Image 1: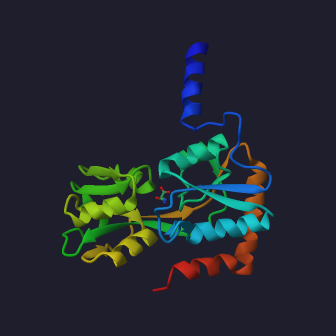
Image 2: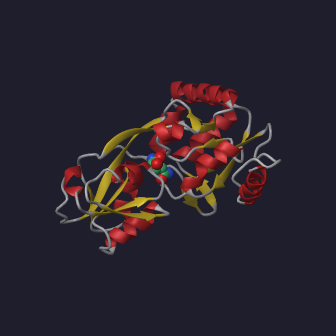
Length: 245
Ligand code: GLN
């Protein structure tokens, strides 16, 4: 049994998933794990990751007197990176849910979000109920992926990036995409012939994920968020990236 465990640990270290000696952060650096495929929260502008989460995290780091370092990775690697200490926090438009709360702590929510349905113009899907029996595209490991599992008789196609699901929809490989509202708005605005179903699929909250054994950082981040909220800085960052309808 011990030998087996040792072999597993070596494998886990090789994959970089666990803390194996060196930590990702120092006292002065705040390492943020994200998946920079999620406009307007995190996306590339040239070789720089920008967006609401990136700017909010930079403001949080400033409050803490630390320097922000952004690590871009697959969305479904973020929780493991936070758990192992490879990253100090996960900031990725990440929805608070019960399953994730078993593995990480979440800060105070900073945004109310929603999952919406993207369809092609002229689709027969008009409400979430119409998804029964349909082929649905989602991003792997997201809440859209989880909720799609509850739809009767649906076939679920999982993609690494939300945009790849949108592309499959454009190519008629799937009937609909379930994805977060703001990225959905960005993808629909960038591609002709797509619309968002009026009725939202779910309502949820985004928060920052922090390791369970780092209560101190959780407290500090919550204090920083409260300050940014009170000063109007958080709203200012959101308004920079999301134009009111
Ligand atoms: N809000 C969704 C989730 O937490 C998607 C986040 C993302 O793709 N970055 O699962």
